[in-house]
Amino acid sequence: MMLENLQILQFLENRRKVHHDAINFCQAILQKKSIEWKAVHRNNLSQPINDVDLVITLGGDGTLLQASHLMDDKIPVLGVNSDPTQIDEVEEFGSEFDARRSTGHLCAAIVENFEQVLDGILEGQIVPSELTRIVMSVNALHLPTFALNDILISHPCPASLSRFSFRIKEGDQPCSPLVNCRSSGLRVSTATGSTAAMQSAGGFPMPILSQDLQYMVREPISPGATSDHMHGLIKPDQTIVATWTCRKGVIYIDGSHINYTIKAGDIIEISSKAPVLKVLLPHQL
Image (tube, rainbow, N blue to C red; front, top):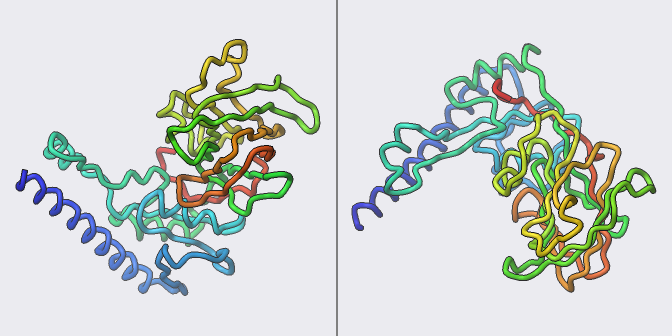
């Protein structure tokens, strides 16, 4: 047991070192270029990002997601995976502990090809893709944060029941019946987020440039005649409108760090009409 704990600690220390080495390496590359740049720790990000031509995030998908919440549709972002998973490590230690590192699904670069990718961007050979985001309003007031991956609306206690009803509308006209739900909550994802929690819950992956949203009622209780409406798509010209009927509720945006409380009677509107995010995507996407 002591040896196993020591291996885990050594692995975590190595992850920290690899990440810091990546920061130093990428900063050295930037210093060689005829460009102005500024390094900002993710914990110090709080204001909208303006007046730059490119944002580079160094970490994993979580770092890119955090930056995206402060970005509009004008500035592109490049994700650099500072600590990618090493297959040989997973094969060697996978039976003893979780030896996976950063997934970096949205990261177009790693340390080894960072300069090559950066040069391609600066020379105009590599261009960003426009990814759909989610916009939400509560009682007709827009929330200030757009979701790149997904949102979850649920009771703040994971063991508690979530009660709500929803229907899909196109303009003012309903295009689905009213669905009354008792469940673990409602998840809505973009195409970008469709390979994350949505797919884990039984959803399907979508082409990353799709403008559709995918929704799923989590663990519905006795859906009965409405079972066909527990999972589906929301088209770009449609909005899903939900009425919350629990005393407490929370809207979680791209994970747990950004959230907004809701209460019984609140009306939540969700659509893909948010400003897109310009992302330099890896070739496989």
